[in-house]
Length: 282
Image (cartoon, rainbow, N blue to C red; front, side, top):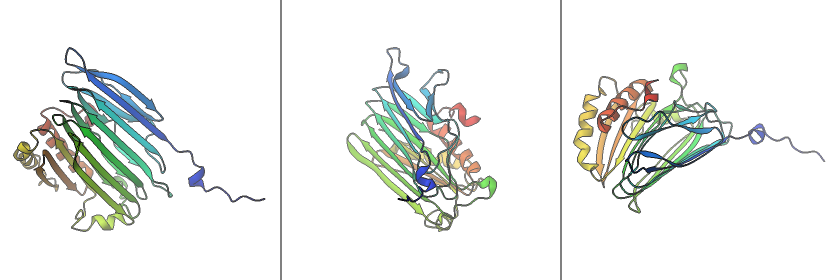
């Protein structure tokens, strides 16, 4: 009996990366790892401790994420702990011949914990198919600052996304109640969709800064002042901020990632009152 050949997309080996991190506040006040699990190409690196929050850097040793790969990051912060999570470089999502790439992030912040999630940008190649989910359970008095940037196509090669798919789903719960829910979907000729004024007005890079904290709404004026001082207008970056229900959201749109990244860095440093992780400088 003859068997039909197995398509390359089904035969190809998939990459599965996982990091599960737990941190706790030590008696002296410093935050340290209490548990860590790693598998596949996803690893965690810990720079030399410096004053301030603990810093951890996610590293993808595969150099990118291909079709059908799945990467998961979990982080749990015990009461009073203070952590910054970032990445060594921009994450690349390669062209897919069918299967969807999955990126899932799940965060848990206990009482008075503070987390700054500050990865570098995610670049989607033409033909990439990505489903990303971001969930968080945070205590009512915890503080969570999230930054995520997306780039559609490789500007250095003149690439645009004529084909592909993106589903980006965020679900954040505070004090046991759903506080923020957002799902963003693009499919097929993504460059054509991004050209529409109601979607991105021709932008090829976008970013979101979301801050949940007891004082988040009171910082709206500061966020708008930082936008004005960051040079967004001179850099041709559209930006705006709003605040409600115990959170602040700031969004940026730009035609290229370079100017957007520069403006975002200025805003983040001003908002957090401290420099960005060192890997952002390299």
